Amino acid sequence: MQPKISVLISAYNSEKTICTLLKSLLLNSIAKDCQFIIVDDSSTDKTYEVIKDFIYSYNDLDIEFYKNRKNLGIGATRKKLLSLATGKYFIFCDSDDYVEKTYLEDLYEVA
Image 1: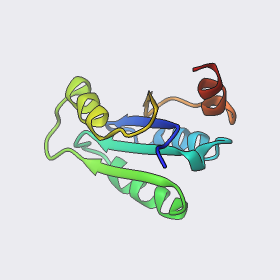
Image 2: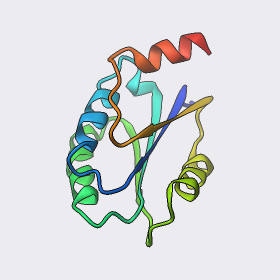
Image 3: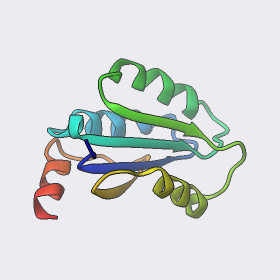
Image 4: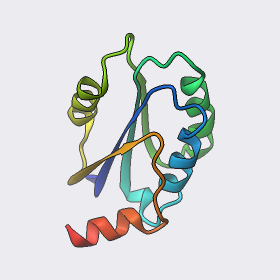
């Protein structure tokens, strides 16, 4: 079944903020019906390890995680994210964002 929403997350040097975003997204009311794609844009801190450890406990959700071999910048990273999206709709999130628990459902209903 096609995901309702592809949630596209770019991360760069965000080891201190990424878990707040991921927790708020993965606990959303329709998370089980969404596709989550995360691309670490070759961070120089522990962002990759933090994300890998965090998403391990959410193996019942559709989460894809990639790391760019070299830093490509936000434009190229978002282009990569879009190429991987399969949802009916998509939304970009930055690694320092936070969303409410009905955010994805509300967006889907409006769309």
